[in-house]
Structures are given as structure tokens and as C-alpha cells.
Length: 176
Image 1 (cartoon, helix red, strand yellow):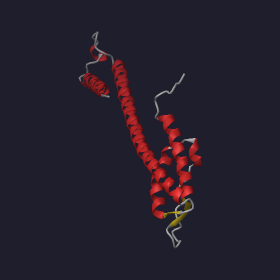
Image 2 (cartoon, one colour):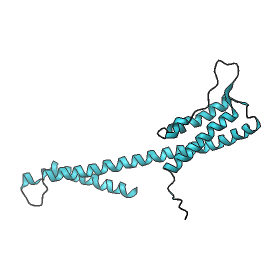
Image 3 (cartoon, one colour):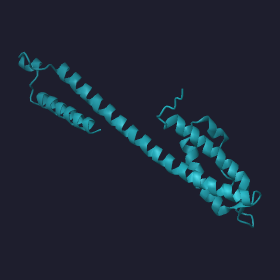
Image 4 (cartoon, helix red, strand yellow):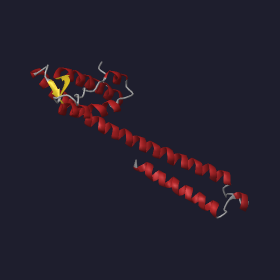
């Protein structure tokens, strides 16, 4: 990345030099001296330099955006793993126990952004959030049991695994 920034600075300086040539009327069409660049040569050179600068910055911005999305995915999938473990434990103790509103909110705070990150994946169609409790009900319990919630979380974990292997795993596992 450092080399790209240095090279960009070089390209910017070349553009400034070409502007100075134009500003000082130091062009072949006016001076008719061999070795002095024509206007078209300066324009082409400046266009090439600008194209390089713009494409390099676009690539740098794209790389930073991908990196930020990956950091968020890694954070959320780690939280999902921990939530799935907790709910699996509760599901073993009380499979038909209802999940309270607090837990539903915490779970969905992780699932919503994960689903957004993976929105272009075919598996997203099958990923459901945990149903929120009815605000008018007299209880803070949702209609989801611990076992229902464990199933939802396991589907998300599988989708996350597929997403990770598709986009982030760069190692090849070839066994002969």
C-alpha cells in the first residue's frame, strides 16, 4: 500500500508539472521547438495519470470496505457461536421452555446484521429471525421455545460457515 501512495504522489506531481507547462505556454504549438510536448501529449499524459490515481483510490476504498465487513462478520459469527452454545444448553434443560424478550432481543441483534451481510446468498431465504414477543401480551415470553431458537441459530451457523468458506477461506484443503 505504501508503494501505491508514493506512486500516486509521483503521478500527482507529474500532473502539476504538466499544468505548469500549460500555464507557462511552454507547448509545441506555441514555441515550435522540438522536444517540447504538444497539447495532445500533455492531455493524454494527464488523463492516464488521473485514471491511475482514481482507480488506485477506488481499489483502496474497496479493500477497506471488504476488510470492515469481514471484521463485522467475524465479530457477529463469534457472538452467534456463543449464543448458540448458551441456547443449546438451555434447550437441553428445558426444550419446551419459552425464550424471554430480553434473550430474543439479544439474539436478533446478532442475527439481523448477519443476515444483511449474507443477503445475496441463496441460504438467506431460509434464515428466520427469532419471533419477537407480542408487546400487548401480559408476559415477556416469546412464542419461541429454546429448541426452536436452537434450530434457528444452527441454521445461521451453517449459513455463516458456508459464507466464510466461500469468501474468506483462502487455503486449499487438498488431500490425496
